[in-house]
Amino acid sequence: MQPILAVAAMGGTIAMTAPAPGAAAQPRLDAVDLVRGVPELGDLAAVLVTSVCTKPSASVEVADVLEALTWARAQVDDGASGVVVTHGTDTLEETAYLLDLLWDRPEPLVVTGAMRQADLTGTDAPANLLAAARVALATEARGRGVLVVLNDEIHLAVRVTKESSTALDTFASPGFGPVGRVQERRARFASPPAARPAPLPPPEAGPVDVALVEAPLADDGRVVRAVLAAGFRALVVDGSGLGHVSAATSQVLATAVADGVVVVVASRTARGGTGRATYGYIGSEAQLIEAGVLMAGELSGRKARLLLHVLLHAGYAGAELAAALEARARV
Ligand code: ASP
Image (cartoon, rainbow, N blue to C red; front, side, top):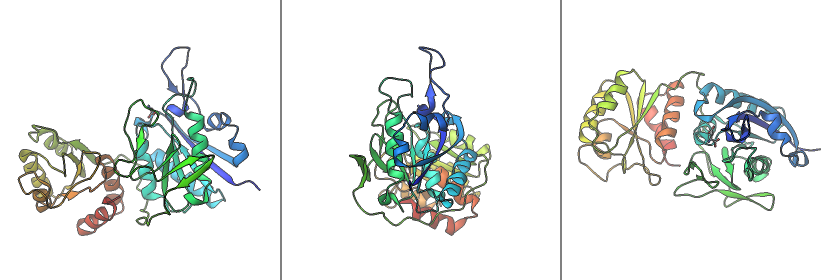
């Protein structure tokens, strides 16, 4: 008997075609169209499909991700060996990470997309979908949480990022590299699955009440002050280097923490993450920690924002929140 593969479509370039010859691409394909475009899938598995949304990925909402999660769980509980979610590449790392925080099954959940739309010569859409399916059905992929597969590379959702706005090999895990590859029609992993933090309860479907801002050169703190005035429940700042902000911004952050706002500082660099005790000047990581700011470790600011959203919804606060963040900050 063939294994069962579940495929959920969420839009993106993999689902885009031009509405007229020469026109710019728009999301137009649903899950049935995508699967129909890859007849080899039928040799691998009995394929079940759903279309969660047909959106460009910047417009994907938490509600869409939760719908995909609920469907994926139900398919696995009904016997599916693995799940593939197709998604726009622009925010794919965020949806994959959010799913990874919540995925509580050993079956592989693989997120894929494409850089070249489905009606372009040399599109990577069918090859990526087929590779993702091979990984989702692989026994060796079990217990690894959510994986991202494009360009025949397999990445952990927690590490992966989109590095190029145009290149086919855009996805990378800076500082780590892929955990595996699809070669000769097989998923091959470099090492066995590592221990993963416990899955978290899904948040309610609603807006993300955690702001994300960058702390650039010559930042006088006005942007952070304005964001705080907008009433966000928590704030993530993409700091420079080991997690640094200007002296002016550090003052604003210290006041916010004293007022009860949860503040997390991430590093805007691609590798290495935030520090703890290397620098002690005003605006440094050590001084921010002293003021009660939490550090995102190796998580990017955009992933720290989603983690904070989930933790706050789950009721984490104070020392428990800090410990839960710390447990997930080294990836
Ligand atoms: N450029 C995007 C993609 O590659 C569009 C999107 O993210 O929806 O899928």
